[in-house]
Structure formats: C-alpha cells, structure tokens
Image (cartoon, rainbow, N blue to C red; front, side, top):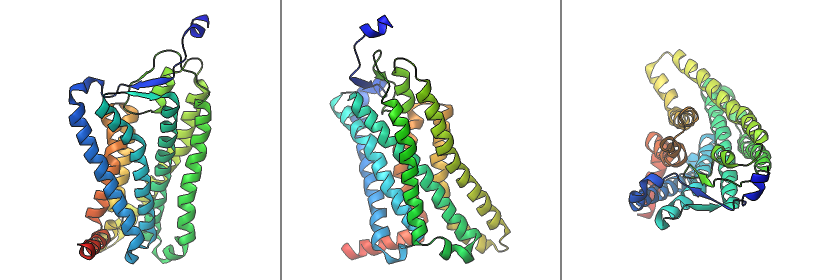
Length: 302
C-alpha cells in the first residue's frame, strides 16, 4: 500500500494500438479517413432516404434508419480521435476523455445489440405472422422498441460506468488498443477490480446474450417457415426480405465472438470500423426499395 501511495496518479493514457506501424501512420490516416467519410456518407444517405421516400415509410426502414443513425454515432466515437493521433503522431488521451469514449462506445454497442434483435423480431412477424404484422408492428410498437433499446442500453452501461469511475490509475498508463475499451482499462487500474469485472460480466449476460438469443430464435423460426414454402419463387422472395439484415447480424456478432475468443486489433477494427461501413452498402446493394429510392434522388438532383 505504501508503494501505491508513492506512485503518481495517472492523468492520461497512451493508446499503443498502432505503435508497431509508426512508419505507416500517413497511409493509415488516409485509409481510415476514406473509411470514415464513406461510412458517414453511406449511413447519412440511408437516413435521408428512409425519411424522404414515402415508399420506405415502413417498420423495416424505420429500424434501418435508426441503425444508420447509430452507426454514424458509433464511428464518430472512435475514428476522429484515431485519425487525429495518426495525423499528429500523438497517442495520448486524458483519463476523463478515455472514460467518456468508453461510455459512449458502450451505450452505442449495447443499443445496436438490442436494435438488431428488434429488427429480427420485425422480420419474424413479417414472415411467420404476416396476417398479424400490420397490427403488431405499428408505429407505436416501432417507437417503443427503438426507445426501449436506447433506454435499457443506457441504464446497464451507466451502472457499469459508475463503478469504472471509482477506479484509480497509478501504474502503467499504456492501453494496448486503438481506443478505450473496458478490459484494457481494467488491467491498468490499481486496487480491487472485482466489482467492475463482475458488473461487466453481468452486463454481457443481461445485455448482449438475451438480444443475441432473441435474434437467433427469430431466425430459426424464419428459416423454418421459409423452408415450408412450397414454391422456389416464394422461398426466394421471403428470404430476400431478411437476407440483408441476416448478413449484418452475422458480421456484427461473428466479429464480436472472434474478438472475445481471440482478442486482437485486427478483429476489433472489423466490428468497430468496418461493420458501420459495410451495413449501408449491404442494404443499398441488396434491397430493391433502397436502390429505387436512391435512383429517384439521384435523378431529381443531378
């Protein structure tokens, strides 16, 4: 204890995620700048189309517009600081700034899990309960699902962050990551971290796991229903209504699971940086309604 008291309190962290690639900082900056711009343009375009095109005023595209809004915030939580560090060569972030980034990232990631589950439920009703879809997935239900996703995610992450704020940092200040994630921060804390680790485990159990199980159960029912459709054309038409969302779900949860089993900067980049870029591309390329809305807006303004 005397040794800990003699150590100075850490006021800033050093992000060492790209330390081994110092010679490639400018190329990496340009690469991630292009990715960030493309992500913002793609997701903002989806939002604009979902709001302005009357044909997209359906529950599916209401959820998609909210997902794109979420992805825009998600990318803006991580990439601007990363770009600044790559451009200037600096790698520092204040402790408060780091915790604020972790807080925002945590809420957005948890909200995305719940929102993907809500979208899966929407596709389940559309395919498995088509006669009741309009009555069950009305405007009020859509708003409640989106608002509930944000509220539950904010609540569980806020509780976790209140415990993180009680941590003290007085030893090493190097975070082996390119952004402030929970596990690397806990490793740098002085004293007992059992409460934070337990809260993190509970949050994963009541946050990510239930939403994943809802998504999984929804698609089991969807696939079972599609396989029972007698005609090949009918099966293809039914599957086309959920294929884009299924790809997004596989990319998101697949990369999360890989990072959990094999933590690495490369896999973390995939779900934090590349997934928000891929999502609007997947929906734009695979959905006829989105392509038609995009064609109309291009024809109108060009």
